Structure formats: C-alpha cells, structure tokens
Length: 325
View 1: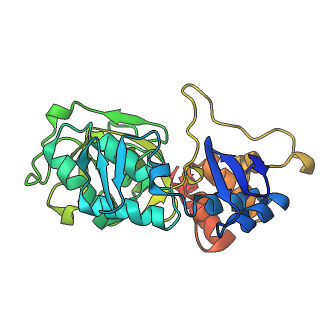
View 2: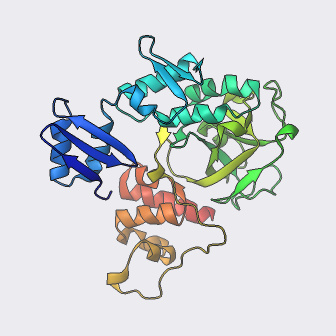
View 3: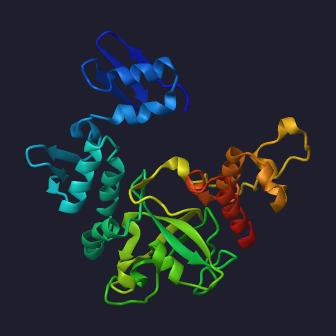
C-alpha cells in the first residue's frame, strides 16, 4: 500500500487510512508499534495495528446503529439486532477487526421484502460459513457448464462480470418448496453436488436484499435469489468471515476488451500480461507474483493470492481454468 497521511507528536500518533482518521495515544499498547511501522515505512503492517482498541462507538460513526455497552447490545434504528449477529459484531470489534461489513449486511437485509428471508438468512450464513464482502454482500458458490451457461436451461451467461436477474414475484419464498424458479447459489458442498461432472465452479455476489428463500432441502445449504453478479472463478475455499477486496478480481468495464499479450518478447517488458499466450509447460518459468496477477486479472480466479500450496498448486489451478475455458 502507499504511504498514508500521518502526524506524530509527543502525545499521540494520527493516521488517515481509507478515509478514516485513527488517533492513538502514547499510553495505548499499540502506540510504539505504530510509530515504528511509520518510521520504517512498513505501511502494510499499519491496518491491523490501527483497528486494535477502536471503541464500538467509533465503528458506528456515520451508520444507523447505536450501542449499549452495559448490555453489549447493538440497535439498528432503535431495534435490537438478532443475538447471533450481535454477538458476531461485538466479537469482531473486540478482536480488533472491522465489523462494518456485518453492519452493512444488516442494512441491506432490511431492504428485503420477505419476512422469511430477513429472519432466516443470518442464521443460514452463520452456520454455513459463506463470507461477506466488505460492502455487506453475500459471496456464494454456483456450478455452471464449461461454457459458463447455467446447468438448468443453458441460456444464462455466467462469465465473470455478468449480472443475472429475474422478477422476484416469480420465485417461491416457501422454504418447503425444494425446487422452483429462481437462481440458486450456496455453500461449496452444495455447489459441488449439483450439475454435470465436468462443471465449472464460479463465485457469485448477492445482495441480502435479493435473497428470496433458503429451502429446507440440501441441508439448507442453498439459496434462491432473484439477482446475482459473477465475480470470478473459484480458486480456493473462501474464508468464513469477510473476503477482502484485494482477493476479488477486478471486473472489466462494459465493452472493454480483454488484455492481449504484447508482441515484444524482450525480458525487460515481461509481466503478467505475457502469460496470456505462455504455453502451459512454460508457466513455471514465471514468478509467483506474476502468476497470481495473471490468475486474478485475466482468469478472474477469486482469492488467487490465497491459494494454499505454493507455486505448483497455483499453476494447477490456472491450468484447470484454462482447460475449462
């Protein structure tokens, strides 16, 4: 990351990061660590240090939430949050992590017209470990055909960046109804069990407002939704809390053409773009950093930088997506 704005005095250190001002007094435990990081220009070390010890009231600034510390209770527009979500938000803040994605999730869920969805959805997410993105949207898995069309009708495009939508009132919100019209996304185990054997696995972003139902079948591991956006190919199992923006591939702008490898092969101009035309058996010659950029930017592999197992496993996943394409 680039150097943020900061100010160090004898009494405190102030850092402006992502639009938020963090002031840490000299008597706080993380004061000296922050000063040391600034002095050594270790900018990537700063974010986790700065969120430590931020009071819940600070996180709530600008949001429609209030906090009653004597009850450890959060309220949204005067209404207390469900216990499971309240507990997760408080624990996340106490651990020094940013709880705002969870609050944004709840804000968006309030726009959902279904009583069932509003009351069932958080419990479903809490059990299944499907993550949120930083804006409070749900990230879930979906199985599609090799050509990115849906497994049922073969008419919906599911290539990265695609958005699919249908009228909400055409979809059953009855959880007793196992199969009905609507788009289905869910947990990894559900997605793996659905579709053909040579399916492709993608990651979808769903606003909580667009969830219609969580059916009881499939052990409640799937959702019927009326709208979703494809953010990329499945790389490795997603985290159970929040997926950082850095792990989500950038989506191409509408009408933009895919990048092409430069005609020149001079070593000094080599970068991840050249890997587009690099033969499979030559990928190992590239750096891990370039392979990750290629996987994220061109192949749209979600969490490309977090695929465990090192360079060899990363190349295997790249080859998988190349073959699927």
